[in-house]
Image 1 (tube, rainbow, N blue to C red):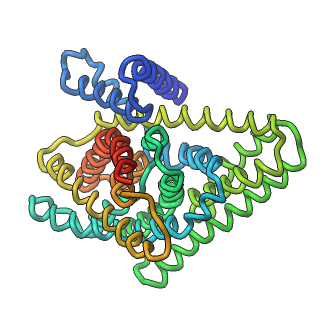
Image 2 (cartoon, one colour; image 1 turned 120 degrees about the vertical axis):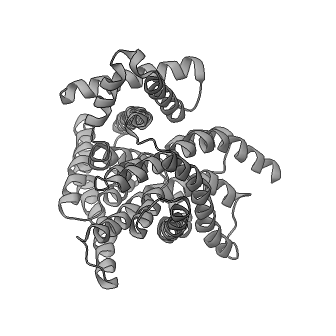
Image 3 (cartoon, rainbow, N blue to C red; image 1 turned 135 degrees about the horizontal axis):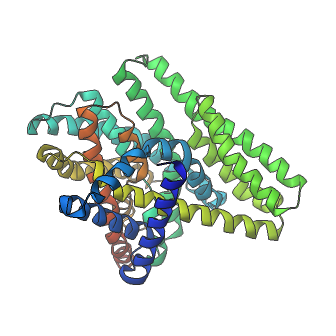
Length: 412
């Protein structure tokens, strides 16, 4: 099956599931698409021989898609730019210290808390997972994904400051979590140098280098946008910035996600204000909104279909269920401790720690990172555990965060 056939099947499924969700389920788009895809996949899995080979064909299709490569080295650049494009830099600046702490110290603390608790848990239930791979599990579960929850927060009337914290954290913690994951993966595979100096150097190269590079390519694109007044050319410039800039960042071994977020913030604020006409802004917004919605539809369908390629063993399923409360506890500490310290110098909305904890949904990044692990039984174990955490996060937490926000408003 060639690339065109795979893309056409995914888009067809996304369109069909979107129709079903819009007409009948009426769930938030991302949650509805993933739930329908998951239920369809589970139905095929359980029916087995009764599907006359359909289940095997669909499983082969899913297995033929390199999920981690498709997301981490393709779709992610477009999704991050689309997300950053509409974030107000002024709002982000007001929450900069909260976002910076959650996206750095929060990611690191969650990584080690989940890693230590998972190592103890796995030993208790008889799973032999090396400690470094438990830390890798913590790193790949650390990044949050706001896609499934943002619409719900807006509908529930969540404070703008809360939305900014969730979006800002998720935009930057993807890049930080990927860097932490790569450092740990290098140690696990013996390809990375294990010393505080080398790890700090890699972190500076990836994160600081990515931010500076993002400013450079964003500035170059901004200068080009100011020289023309043709929306087709200007949309192409932003598309080239996103795809070409991301690819070059990977070649330079700096954080491509952070680079694209920084470039997107620059274009979305100064670029929109000073380098575009009203007509260009309208076309640019419509284009990137459509790209964002289409890619997210395909992404959540893919996440739902990954059910077909999981390894189903009782120990893996039990471990996945037990890791869910551990992940929430680590998130609670990672969010609650810094916000508790910051309360002395700034005000926060009611129940902010509870909402940030429960609203810290995991998504495609976690699944993609798990699938990028070296092949073997450890990888199969961690992929299944990660998928269970992600599925619970998107479906259960995603569907209940709205009522929680409404309750917090009553408390106030």
